[in-house]
Image: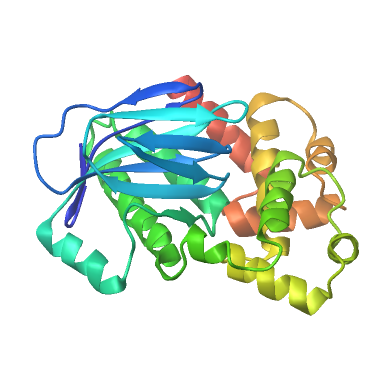
Length: 271
């Protein structure tokens, strides 16, 4: 159990297949479940359905402890059971954040890193490990609240929203491809300034930032799971040059690719 000011994380986990998601029984009012969606899915809660695209999230009060997941393809849902204090609930309402509505994730790569910290911190036994988890929880909620000024239902009013959503999904599925903004604009039949405007309105981030984030995520998976040289990792992740890859990696991750691989593998050995 992790606590951060007025928020308590009861449990978190992942589900990679369709079916019914079970949470532990809630014991207090103001218990919420949070779903972070990595694939196109239909979520059923009681008689209500939510149609979730990749890189979206939903915060919902507990009405029962079972949520049915019906993905299109392979399911990829991360879930959290949270308890919020009355003060925090009031703060959320003051900010205008909408419960029971689907929101877009503006920074999927940052969420990915924070999730890893939270997942590991669940079983932390040291004070430092618990402190890291609490800070990660606080940061996660701050990033989620960034979406409070635009739900998916309102973002869907953006012109070409369905095409933009499909584009964003392809970018994260195939970061190694050449994602040139001019080519994308020509395919959509719109100008570059207009494309930047509607992409930002739909997702709270730019297409260029999403391309870089997808490539960083891909490179991290390769560094974790292969012994490929840095140059090969850079190429497979879609970066134009090794120098640009290493500069972007250090900027977003805070260390070089070599250091990341070493630290990751050492952490695996220490488990």
